[in-house]
Image (cartoon, rainbow, N blue to C red; front, side, top):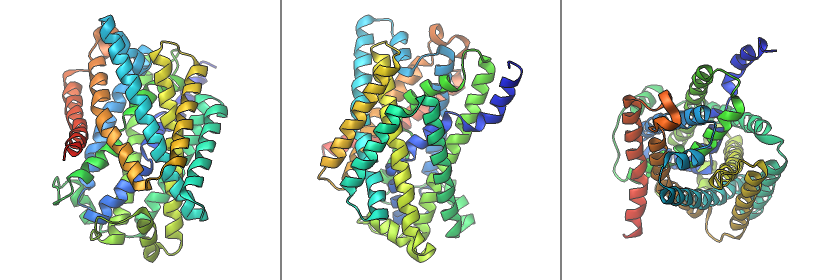
Length: 410
């Protein structure tokens, strides 16, 4: 048995926790934001997704390494890395409040986005679809058979969704040379700053850092060689995040071809769905709706799941039942808010993205601090190159929050 396990693990490395991260960040906000970016600015913001993919890989690699080396989650590691008791409590409360409130906002946006896809497919109301899908998410969280079975479900949905979006991008026949040129042309068209920040904010998701630090422990047990686990985890993260970034790029490219980068700021998600029909026929509308629904459902599972992990770690009780109950409460509140919301899907999803922009630099800074604690990570601390890369990412992550704060006063 001990001889065959490593070989089996090598055969399955492609289907690891990194795909849960991908399932989480390809939510309705990503689908809608990337669609708007392509419709409004053509291919010109593709480079921001390249930056976002690199930033996500850096942060998620650190979160995965933290989980494998310490065998604890990010919330627990933050607590352990702060020597002062009062500072420990303050940091724990800050992270707990931010993640629970932020993930509840995410959950509301995820379900409304999924409900919009459901509405396009069935003709039912967005609210009804959101509440039905919220109920499905809660059932999966309550009776999903543990993190391992839940992870397999999310991976399957992500793979199917990725095939659908990438195939659609190929069907619309974009100008390949122009696409490649814009990926490496670091310029911002007039009026595109907020959209560029939104593309980064929908890819680099703070709760994914807590989620990743926990799920890597399910995939690679302490019985495995740490060096082998770290190597496989890095490869898994690189593959999965890159795939997720390519899917986001495919959404942007599809919208750019459909609109020619000439749409105005009033475009809606329904417009995006309808505009695919001249290119793909009647199926275009339904492919978009199905992708939006799948993106919302996968994110509607992972957001409460991550919040449950944080609650469990914050009270220093690694209790599966406590984590599950906390995730169900977040899912329930998000479902109720999605059903009661009188705002448009766009307003709700933009609010969730604003919460992301404010939360991300805080979580990224805590992670960077933790990854430089030798008493916690020993020789697996960040080296100077990783610190420079991570410091740059924290700076980039702070930009959406700064923009959000400026917007509050203007």
